[in-house]
Each structure stands twice: as C-alpha cells, then as structure tokens.
Length: 73
Image 1 (cartoon, rainbow, N blue to C red):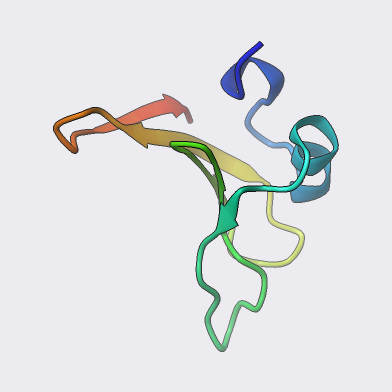
Image 2 (image 1 turned 135 degrees about the horizontal axis):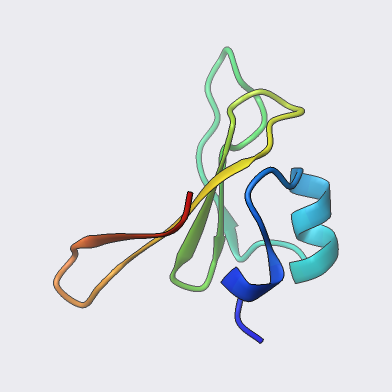
C-alpha cells in the first residue's frame, strides 16, 4: 500500500506519523511557526497547515520533468 492510500486530508501530523512512521525529511520552520509544515516520504511531500496543531492539506510530488502533481487536496 502506498503513502497516499494510507492517509487522508485533515489528518494531524501525529496521525500521519502513526500510519507511516517518521518522515524521511521535513521542511524548514520559521520564527513564527516552529513546527515544519512539510513532511517528506520518499518523493511525496505532505503539506500541513503551518501551526503546531495544523492538519494535512495536500499531498504533492513532481514527475520526472519537475512538473508538480497534487495527489490529494
């Protein structure tokens, strides 16, 4: 079962990690938002609302030409 089949929009970071395990990488933080808003699992980026209790809003990847593909939103 792939990443997208195991998640759904609106899940918390904790729910995602519970299903998928720790992310391979995370996006950067800012002074305002200390919790990363992007979790990477392989080539798939999971985008969360930026605040600490933020929920999943999008799953994204790019094809071999660098063209963005939204997998869930």
